[in-house]
Length: 243
Image (cartoon, rainbow, N blue to C red; front, side, top):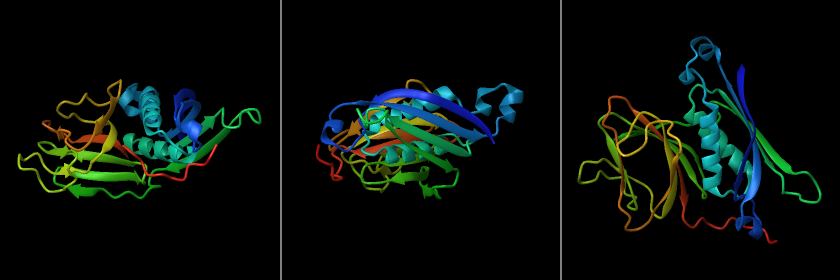
């Protein structure tokens, strides 16, 4: 299998279980390996026949900076699931996360490395009135999902978590009480959202009681795919270790 590699991607984010690690960002170094067939891109010269490594770097950076992880293992798992969902041509993803300051004074760092193939998560899309919803991963900390909004359809997401259709015909309200979200278009177009693969990525937003709903409306003739990461505004305690 052919491979695209990103080596030594650097960013700063919240990562760790100790109280001081929850208060300040730390550096991370990230290696990404994408396994896919590059023969079509090698012949055509078109970026859409491959995986855009610049876009991949933006996506990984956005997710890790948004999430404020406790464990590198969770960060690696979520990044792998996101990349497989957002890049259909990719058949295998390898993620290595290096935390240089993890063992300061004792070692050069600590790292976690995972490798996942397409189908590793056994996701089955859930049919919805607006298209479908694919839950990639879900935990008390976050939900990662891929929404397909079909042509001429719309869905509304807000503080009301009722799945019943809204009175204005916008389709169902998607769960989202007291939630932060990060999202970007994987493909297609939606009203009021930048076109697919736009850079910079859509900045994180917060939805709470009384917030106006967000409407995802597809007025085009092809389905739109929207990746979203949703986190509670106040995540439940996961047993943070003492300093």
